[in-house]
Structures are given as structure tokens and as C-alpha cells.
Image (tube, rainbow, N blue to C red; front, side):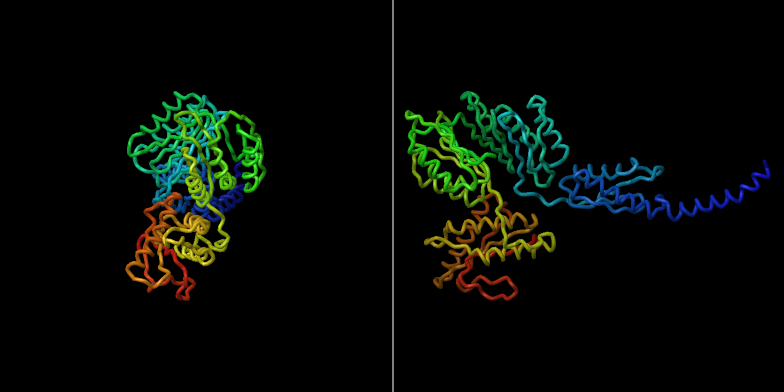
Length: 486
């Protein structure tokens, strides 16, 4: 037996040496290999769990978490994900031992919008921004509880920028109101909670509207809770559907023709004749349909019940279409109340297709604004300071660009004179033009704190921004991109 031990000893020694060499130079537990593997696994875990703002650098088994965190809660949750990204953590099993949280505060989203929608079958969709994943989970659980256990569809994103006060309490209050409606939507934008929907019981409409209106400061509640409509037009998967009751065949044909002339897709006519129905609202429908037909989503209708809003348009569309339909309904002069609750959406901007907004954010943003203004000049009506309706689509493009720019950038809107009169008067005219652009952007939901207006007289014409520094004859509006340190 001893002879066998002697014979095997050299073999064992060689094996021990080989194992030691492999452990020192090739093993995943070697410090360099281990750190690389941990870093790879940690970053994969962050991506898998939705922390796309975060990344990890390893120093041995010590992780350093970096990135722009939307909230402290999000940073702590990401750190926990890193700690458990491989083998549960710890020295013995070779995982991450410590996570150093070295994140930066995320730039605030503005406007900070959260939204809940309820369909006629009781299904709830949650979307928009929330301050943390924990709050998102609590809101999702509350939605399921209020709908009798029916799971909500969760499209919410964590972001910085939620207003102070009891934001979560207001969102959950909105969910409670929504659960009592037949169908509808609650939208919390900053500190304003808007509730729209239908409720067939007049007493319930009154009660729910009063609750929303009584929302405590610093928050504000605005209700638009309607009964049954006489007539509606709605954007659906089928197309633009017209249904309800009209007084005559001529009215039915006029409404259908107005929709078909402007809708991008199919128009489905399900209207019925009812000679005893009131028809004062038809002028508003005929006036609104050419613009509403180009909305992306929404519905419009006449709600005649006492206490209701009258003629209502809701949905999503470029800001220029929302502004157009408001102006058109006001000019129609029907005498009936008309309410437009529509939310702006961005348009395509082919002029900036080559701009990389992720590199040198201020320069990219400035280049994009210049490209839009070069081919889409902003004009004014005869009074010289009212934006012309023809310029609204160009302003939609400027809005779309502003939303793609980094949220920390500021925009200085410069208005220029187009005549050679009194310098002071012309400077005032230039500022009025700049303020008109600012007002358009703010009305479309842009943060006014990021905008400023300056006026220039005829001795300071707008300059080109293509490095030539030459004046641009006739350009009345220019935009200068600033950082907060400028």
C-alpha cells in the first residue's frame, strides 16, 4: 500500500500544481475574471429589470452603481438588483459584496403626466410617469382591487419630476372616481387632475363631479362627466364612426360628407333619423368634423342632458389641430356650450432626421431648431403680432423638436421686427411676437419655466445659424438654446 502511495504522490503533486495554476490564472474566481463576470451579469440584470438608466463598474467584488436615477427609491431598487445579480451575493460564493450608490439625480420630466383609462368592459390601462416602482406597484394593486380583481394593464414608467404634496394619494383618488364611472379617463398633469367619462345616473354625475372639484390644494380637480349623447363621432379600429340621431336626411348627408372629405381612413355611417330631435348642435358638428377627422384618437358628441357640457370634443392631435378646432367652434356662434379637452401629440419632423440628439445635446438641439426654421418660417397676421394659422404646423414641428431636446435645456425665443420704424416700438413688436410663440408652446403643455421671450428692433435682424453669421431677411422668429449655466 505504501509503495502505491509513493507511486501516486508525484501524480498528485502534478495535479495540485495544475489546479493551482488554473485557479490563479484561468478560474472565473480569479479577481480580474471575477470582476468582469460580475460586471457583465450585473448590467444584464439591470437591463432585464428595466433599469435602463443605470450601469455598473466593478472594483473586485465591490460594485459602483452610476447613472441618472429618476428617484431615490429607484436607485435603491437598482442597487438591490445588482447585489443579487449573481449567486445571491457574498464573499464565499463569489458574488457582489457591496454596492456603492453613486448615481446622479435624474433630470425632471415636464410635464409629469400620469393616466388611467377605463373601457366599457371594465378593463383599466395605466400609463404615464410615476415617481417610483414601489408607487407603481401600489397603484396597480389599487386598480385591481377597485375593479374586483381584474388585473390592470401596466404601461407606467418611473421618472423624476413628480410635484410635491400627496401625489400618490391624488392618483389613487382619481382611480376611485374612475371605478365609479361607466367608462372614462383620469389624467394627472402636474398638480391638475382631469376626470372625463360617462355616467348615466344624473345624481351620480353630480356627486362625482363635486368630489373632483373639491380636490384639496395644492392640487386641482377638473371634471367633465357626461351622460348619454344624442350623436357622436369616434375614432375606432374600424375608422371614424358616426352614430346617433339626426333630424333629417340632409343633415345626415352633410355630416357624413364632412367626415369623408377629411378622414384619412374609412368613415362608417350608423346615424339614424329622428325628426323630433333638436338640431341646434349640428352646426357645431359640421364645423368641428373637418378638423376632428384628422385627430389621432378621440370622440366628439352632443350631450343635451341638464348639467352636461353640451358639445364636447376629446382626444389627441397635433397642437395646431386643437387650436384650429377651438377657434372654429368659437366662430360658429351656435349659442351652445362647446368644450375641447384634447391633448397635443408630436408630429413627424423630417428636417431633423439626421440630428443625433444623444451627442452634444445643446448643439444638436440648436441645429434641429435652425433646420426647422430655415424651411418653415413663422408668420403673423395683419396686426403683426398674432400668429398666422398657416404657421401653426411649423410651430408643431418646433414643439416636437423641443420634446426631443435634453430636459435641462432652456429656450430663448427671439422676436424680430420687419420694418424700420421707431426702435422702441419695433422692439415691443418683436417681443410680442416672441411671446405669441411662447404662449403657443405653453398652451400645448410645454414647461413655461424653460422658455423666455426677447424682442429685437429692425437694427438687429435675425442671423443665420449655419456658421455664416449672416442676417436672414424676413425671419421674424429665432430660437436660441441655452444651458442652465448660460
